[in-house]
Length: 122
Image 1 (cartoon, rainbow, N blue to C red):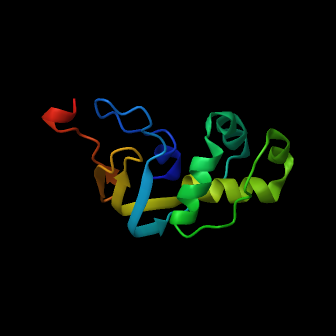
Image 2: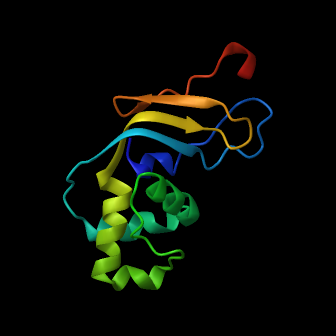
């Protein structure tokens, strides 16, 4: 699961008001090479919750991103490369996503998050 995907997921358990961002529990992560596309990064940047991406990247062992980011940084090639690496190349293979409000664990196996809810959570 890429951090791009993680940045878009939230806990939808009944009664949860603060289900984003999901915390990462990393058992296994891999780096997968992805072709660099600066235009894609510039277009997706406004949709990214930066603090959630930063925390997820740190959990995955990548501390290269700045604490804060703004659109003017998209003209900097070095920033774009770091953003690309964290967003698209870091993959959570095994672990869990944890609801920040309830602590409910959603397992991630072979890079696929299982976000199915139990009957009493719907």
